[in-house]
Length: 140
Image: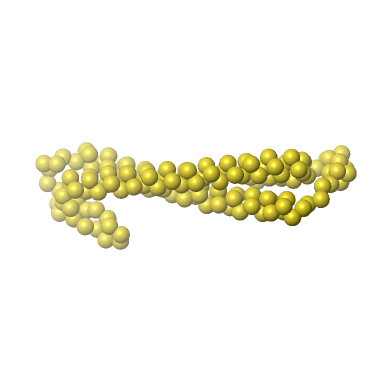
């Protein structure tokens, strides 16, 4: 986060045209703050889901290289919860495809929610900067 000091001229200008903070202004500021926190959480969730998807893709690619005719000791193992289950290779590939599809849907939902949050934040920024000008800092 970047902080900067106001110059003497800016400080004098801010003091001269100080705008009174009304209740509705404070509500908008509080809403912006909550949205910023939600944005941060959604970004973290998106990173986690993207990593999970990359891991599933990597596993699927490795299994594609495996020869279906080649015997793999104990067949392939698929993780369900905290347990590993031995399954035939084609079934593991089906489960991986389903898991990848599910996580792609989840990523799309998170991206949609994140877009909505960012849009509302932009609207609030416009309104608050129009009212307070340089005397408020909403840069995140």
